[in-house]
Picture 1 (cartoon, helix red, strand yellow):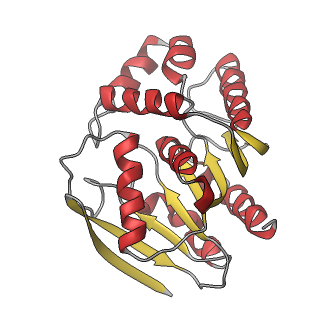
Picture 2 (picture 1 turned 90 degrees about the horizontal axis):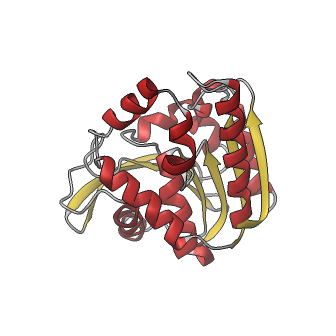
Length: 241
């Protein structure tokens, strides 16, 4: 089953696609990275749809979704996703899968709606202390390129505000968490790669039941480089319910 929809929420319409069979398992809800939209999951959507219903969507201003006048921070995006799920009648429980900045959003969603979430997969997700701890270790060229990328949805300040929101709302979750860390990041020195994996490992502390998987042959888009790593993480959460 494939169902495409434009869903009216407060202030804009969001594009969403529901794929798979409703087999009584939690719906897998996926959120792409900064500036990315639902197509970021093309490499895994078919395999995941064999496991359960899967919802992918475009955040406001991306892909086929309309723009929103709300701030482009994680707090607003969590509200919009919640509204989308209600309006589209996609009932909990959910398994959340967030890539990069999408992981920031879904960590906050899981914190706010913990009783609706059965598991969380973070795919090379942005740690809340990225700017303070990681960025200063990279070359000036890398830092300049990083700062210049914020033109697609939120600006640099809104992105950093999202990381602050993540830090402010952080608390222990009682849901299973699988953290996937890219083991072969582009333009990373050995020291940077080790620090990245260390910071990913520290994210495990937010859950009482967590596991780290390092995707040794993947750059930032683990779902493209080693799609089976993402699929098997979701399958594990579904099988363990």
